[in-house]
Image 1 (tube, rainbow, N blue to C red):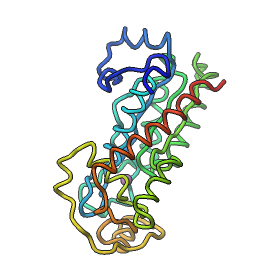
Image 2 (tube, rainbow, N blue to C red):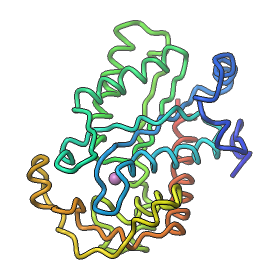
Image 3 (cartoon, rainbow, N blue to C red):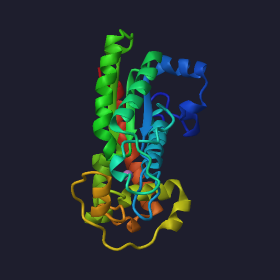
Length: 262
Ligand code: NI
């Protein structure tokens, strides 16, 4: 894949915005107006999953997409909308309005410098509605402030775990044991990225089924160990490497299309 797109790079390190100087960002903008923001969440992922699962996975996928496409990757936003997970220790949530304001401000910061295509790689379903609302708000603000970027500004949400090839692979690997939260596919990606997490894994009893969520207390009552219909003990680091590659390939294709759209 490397070299298929102008600017594709060999190493994931050099694709990090955080490691670039501002003159380097200026130079980058002469060739490419695209940027990737990894968006995660810091929330319980069942009795054996890492609290940082959604941030670890979003950043890992984003860095691989960056490496494949040459598009810069910003630092990950590790906190998301996780109000319904607050019944479990370690969860740190932003209210929807707070997350909306954070994403709005980040998009406008990037737009001010001339980034026209903001590709948010998301690891958490609870962020989707708020991220879309933030994009709408950012478009409105850019227009009302007459920002030069306003007519060209585009934002796209790419939920890696919902990409068609990823969902097919998860179904092939885990069938109906994939479930809806603390899924073996997302846990597998964390094992690939952070091998120390393998030591936490152990067989678990059948989880509570998936169902409606009405708030943190209700979530904990319905899903006492935090899982929703999932069997994360099926996850392996090898699965995680394969899922990461599938996600990065699929999202790189989406990103290339996004960058070339009028
Ligand atoms: Ni998750």
